[in-house]
Length: 113
Length: 114
Image (cartoon, each protein chain N blue to C red):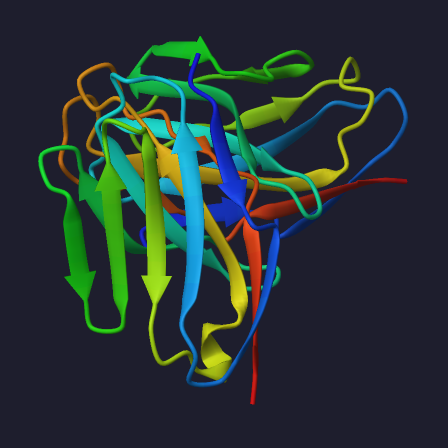
C-alpha cells in the first residue's frame, strides 16, 4: 500500500520567514495530495490540495509543489505569522480507486513572534 | 465543516466494555471514513464506507467494527478486543470514488481508558 513520509517533524521559524515542509510517497498511482492544518485538539482543516496534472498551486501565502517523477511534494508558507503555528499533515490518495487518504506523520510548526 | 457531527466529545471506557462513537453528516456525501490519531502522530485509517450497507477495513481495523445502515451515519464501535483504545478518533466524509472534492472532518472524539 501507499506510504507517506513527512519531514521535518518539528520546524521553528521566526515570524516573517518562510517555512517548507516536504513529503514523499511510494505509490506512483497516487494522484491527489491534500495538506491539512490541525490546531491542538481540533479537526484537521484542508488548506490546499494539488492533483497530479499540475506541478504547482498557490493560494495567497501558501503554495504546494509536486514532482511526480521523484514522488515528492512540498508545502511552502511565506511571511509566516504566529497564527500559522499548528501541526501540518500531508496526505496522498488514488482518486479513481476510492479516496482513502494515507497521511504523513505531521510537522509541528512554531512561528516565533 | 459544520456538516459532520461527532459525539460524544469525550468518552471513557472500562475494562472489557464496548463503546460506540457516533458520526453523522448532512452533506449528502457517499463516502465516510474513520481515522485514529495517537499523540504526536498522523492519522491512520480504521474503516471506510463508499456506499450504504458496504464498508471496508483500513490499515488498523482489528478491535473495531462499523455499520453503514444509513447514508448519513457511520458509527464506530471500539470493542474489548482493542487493547489500546486511548486515542483521538476522527470521522470524515467526501463525495466518494473519483470525486474532485476534498475530505472533510468532524471535531473528533477523545477516548480514554478508566
